[in-house]
Structure formats: structure tokens, C-alpha cells
Image: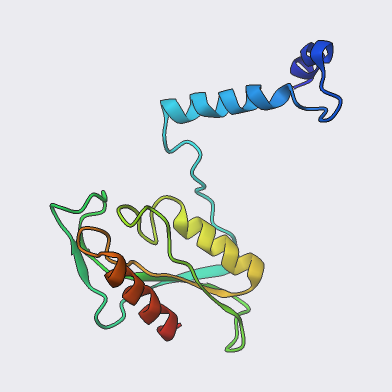
Length: 153
């Protein structure tokens, strides 16, 4: 870092002292991601937070041949993260994971790790529903699944 900063002193931008470092950092990250797309996924879970898989009635769906996600087969189990000190009065968070409605689950793409950290830091119960991905689910089905999860939570 010091060498990069020293090199950048010649054309230093006084408005931001680390301006020269940013392109090198971004380049380093891009190189890592190109070599290994899972290099930057968070794999750590916080302490004092436990998880529970939950199958609510009517949430089962099948990620079959037309489903683009890698996690195939029977799906629909929600993931609930609970901080150890949670009580009935603890706040609740419903987190509908990303993936453009095509990819992801409560346990893939570091969604579980992020949900666990939100639970621990916010002292909140966090629920990540496994909604039906396209083409099984469409906008209306996914919205219905999210509303039902919120009502349960």
C-alpha cells in the first residue's frame, strides 16, 4: 500500500488522498473474481445466533429441469436466524433474498451469513423465505409467498 501511495504522489489528487489506490484495489478484486467467482462470498457466521429450517404449510415447490438455480429438487424451507437473547418482543425482519427471481435460496450465495449477521447486530429474528423461483414462480407468486412469510413472522 505504501509503495502504491508513494508512486501516486507524483499525480496526487488532493481532494482524496487515496485516489491512486482505488484503481489498483478494484483491479485486484476483479482479478480474484475472474479466477474464482466464489472468492468473495462471506463464509463466516456470527456467534450467539442460531438458525432453524422451517417448513410452513403450502410452501413446498420443485426446482426442476426448467429451474435455473443450481439447488434442484424439493424446495420451500425457510431459514430463520434467532439471536440467543431474542424474546417475544424482539424485532422481526423478513429478508427476501436477491437473485433476479431466478437464482438463490436462504442458504446459498452467502444469504445465510448476511441474514445471521443482521440478526446478531440488530438483535432481531430474521426470516429468509425460499420463495418459488422462475419459471415455477412469477411476480404474483413470489409476492404472495413474501406476504405469507411476513404474516407468519
